[in-house]
Structures are given as C-alpha cells and as structure tokens.
Image 1 (tube, helix red, strand yellow):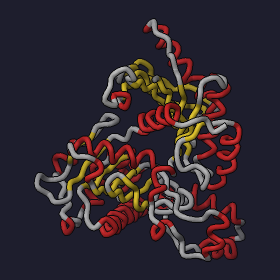
Image 2 (cartoon, rainbow, N blue to C red; image 1 turned 180 degrees about the vertical axis):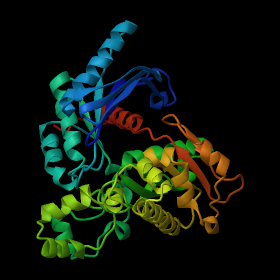
Image 3 (cartoon, rainbow, N blue to C red; image 1 turned 120 degrees about the vertical axis):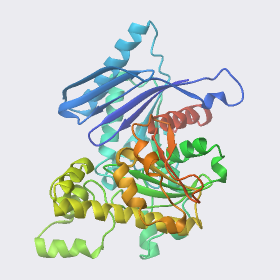
Length: 416
C-alpha cells in the first residue's frame, strides 16, 4: 500500500509517501519505504519548500505560499513532477492526516467522512494553534485530490488513551468534569510513540520490556512516561497549553492567574488564553524570540532575560523527568526528540546536569556528535555502563501516521 502522510502544523506542512510491502509474509507490511518526502515551512509570503526523493534533496526554494490549501497544491505539484521524471505513477491509495485533538470521540485512527470532519472542526477550540492547520490540510487535500482516495485522521491524543485515571483526572468537581469531558488528553502522541519505537530498535530490545521517559522539545514541548509501550502520564493536559515551557506557550501556571489578569489588565477570557498561548513561554520570558538558537546567542552576549528563559525552560524539563522516573519506578532510558531535543547539545547537557543521582551521565563527546540525525535514527549519548541510558532520536511522525492509516484502512470499516 502507498500512503501519503500529511502532517499539518499551524504554519507548516510536512509530507511523505510511504510504501508498504504487502507481498512478503511475516508482517513485512509494517516495513516502510519512504519514496518522497518534504516540507513547506513558514506558510505565508516567504515559505520554505523542501522536496526529497529517496532521501536526496532535489528541490529547495523560497516562495509565497499563502494558505494550507496552496501548500497542498505545491506539494502535489512537486510529487507529480518528480513521479513523471521517474516514469512511475504516484499510485497513492490512502492519505493520513495528523490531527492534534481528538477529544472524547476519537481514541484511535478513523476514516474521515463528513461527520468526522465536522467533529474535528468542533474540537478546534481545544487546540486553537493546531487543529485549524490540520483542518486546512484536510480541506486542501480534498480540493486537490477529490474524495475518491480514502483519508484517515490520526490523533495525537490517541497514544495517551492508556493513561490511568489517577493521572488523567483533574481535582475539580467530578460531575462537572465528566459533563464537559475535562481530563488529561495529552498531545504529541504520534511523536512520543515514534521516539519510543526508535529507542527500542536502537537498544535492540522489545518495546514491551522498556520503561522510557520521552522528551519532545521544539516550539511545542512535552514529556511522557511510557511503561512497556503504553503512555502512563504526559505533561500536556486538557489542551496543549499545560506542562513544559514552550516557544510561545506558558506551560504550567497557577489557574488563578486567569482571573487576576482579567481583573487587573481588563482582559477577556479569550485575550488571556491568547496571551498564554501566543505571548508567553520563551518569547514572553525573553522579550526577544521563541527560537532557542536566538536565545543561546543572546545569552552568550550577556542578555540576562535570555539566560533566564533558558534556565526556566531547562529546569521545567528536568523537573518533569524526575517526576516521571518516580511514576515509572525508574527507567531504562531517557529519549530526546524534536527540533531542540535533536539539535541542541547545549540544552540537553543543561537539562541533564546534576542528574547523576538517578544514573543519568552523558558522554560529552557523544552528546556533541549527536546532530543532524535522519528521521528514524537514534544515537546513544550516555556513558557506557550508566544505569540510565540516554538517546537522541530523529522523530518520524509521518511514518507513524502512514502506518496507522494503513492499519485503519485494512482492519477497520469506514466510519460512515
């Protein structure tokens, strides 16, 4: 089966065509071959387009791509032109879309029909930075490719459906919480599932035998405790706002701040939520940027606010790692992923500093060498013999989306 995986963010679109071998026995259909992949980042007046064939870059450019629908059209143009050059048809048999919030309704991948699409639109209020981009990606794919090719929604919240009640339940009136579906959903589930699988392969151990703490650090950040392949706790909650310090999101804070800011700044609820989602985190702390690279450069020049932003960021990650070691009763490995987690040896070292008490000891040379990992690859950066191993892994959300899409198409009936 050939699956087009589309990973739409708030201002980006990543994609892969993944081919599964359905002819060989022994579960070979799970073995994924990536034929084409690419991305369209910073959708707007100066979008960056990247397109690769079998891992080799064949196109890179900047141009105006105003909307997600235009991004899908640009993606399809690149795919079709490259396919013609190969003399092979694209042959896409299914399309998988990452959707951030699945709410109470969607705990596993599902075929996208009109009813499903309407529910995904309704859930946008719970993930205002993300679900709109996912919706735009689905609309764009429908406009370009029509309705004949089956489409599947793969939900970031799905991986966390195994979190037990004591970790998922907020300490508010239980009847009110149940009425409105208020509990810890968790997000970045596709990424955390990918990190866990990549780590297990690198360690040459079954995932079902491992206790892992996975840390996905990018503009959005989250940590997850994984016990033998099952998520048992995660830092994001009812929405993607809770947990770690992020690029523009606050992460954990006192809920009384909402009323306090409304009373003293004259803000509405919507304005406070936008403030916490769009003007907080690294950007709010530093007053400069939500990009960790910029902040490290400014810290080196002596900027105190940039230094504080980085210190708060690393402290919050370290605190969550420690709490999840307690949840798991110890762990076999800590796994870093995401743009910051994969590319910043300095941040990894600062997070892990002072954690020898739990057996976490980084090898400085390995840590610095772990850069530019390919999707699906991993590198061990802890000392040999350290009781708690540490890996950096190249998250491969698109292959996870494609696998889930394939399984949904082959094993589950349409939702309509």
